Image (tube, rainbow, N blue to C red; front, side, top):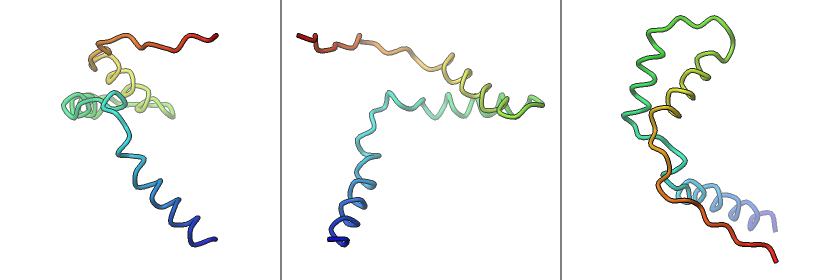
Length: 74
């Protein structure tokens, strides 16, 4: 029983990154640009660098092209 559980968990962990769509990640060029910009700024507070990089990626990443369609509830 435990062996099957461990094997199932391992397969799930290995398959999960393959299911991620490109919408979850920015292009490497945008990330490199934002990290280079962050390297030139002196940050004082905790989380300031992460906050700057997140905002930079959000500002420079393209917006989704199509509108999501949701199922209507009955």
